[in-house]
Image 1: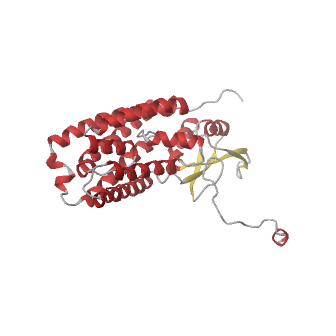
Image 2: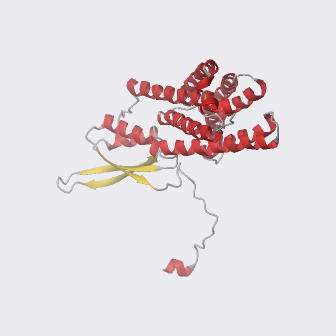
Image 3: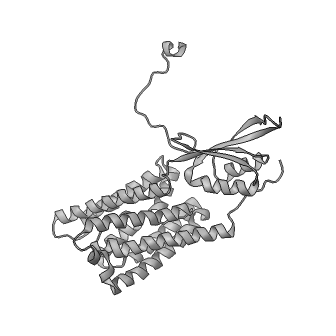
Length: 319
């Protein structure tokens, strides 16, 4: 069929992505140093591990965050390739710098931290801080970026095990929060349980905020694309988005012209990428996009049902 044109992100798009990743990580780092650290809250992720180390040894969390991520990046490059790691490396560097910066500012201006502004109200600080962290992570994800750390672990686990990306992250985060009970020095067990309590509040709110902003990792969209350049569009979807494509025969009622309709199902987070590619390939294409409640199989969610249904009943077959 000849050489096909595969749209690539423009420099403007890439700069926008990196800018939004920077904004998201700046919000994340600010929240950690001004909301979470003053109350010694424990969260998931490598920042949570860094927080535990800082609370117990006094070593600033950004150093632990950076060192652990360096190890994970080396593993990720071998397992996932450079393409996955470029923006992740950028995110790790930005996050480390921002944590250092806001750490210094929180010490220079302690009166502006949540421990003073929301003195005696740790639950409010935890809720507000968790919402900001969720927004920061969402900015990264919406820009095809990563915050490093647990994202890398989850991606590697997802590659080899039948565990979804989100579930793998949840398991790791929960283990980090629970481990704080045995590691962080405390006056009594009640205080330690409170730390875990706030940690799980953070975990829930962060995930709710993240899902709200990125329309949930499970949400999918269906496309019907009417274009004379159907072959190039289908090629892009299969090669770049790694999604299946079905070509439907079509006949224009008025023109009588025969053609093909490209139909595909993709994650909601891939919708903008696909629309941008279609615009580059065929600006005159007619595109119908609709939300899908759930999609199972072929790269999406697995059908999970413990209920056994008889499918060889002759009465059912005959009916």
